[in-house]
Length: 133
Ligand SMILES: [Zn+2]
Image (cartoon, rainbow, N blue to C red; front, side, top):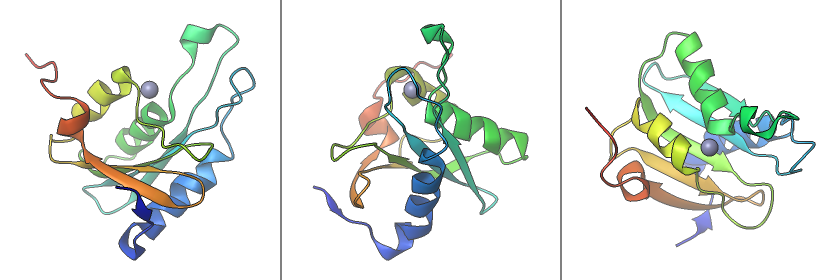
């Protein structure tokens, strides 16, 4: 059930909302912002970065993961993804697997709209039977 942004999620929501504005999405015009709360207590953000050669584009979640790893954090504790409209934007299949590399099936994934409605699922709900070796 969607709910208003809880106060504990407000910093994560605001970080994802802020970085959404920087998305490079001239082809889809679908700007997405993502924020990760990592095991070091810091927030890492990312936006989608499209390319004229469409398959080369990168999702917001992947950008945020890159920022987190680049700063030395190791694990994802929570993820917030802000959609560009009034409908939540779940991560694409590829990003679900990318998130799973650094998060557990119990990790909360918050799907927010720009007006602050949040739906929370676990990564395990989004990606049951994740690939693993
Ligand atoms: Zn993706």
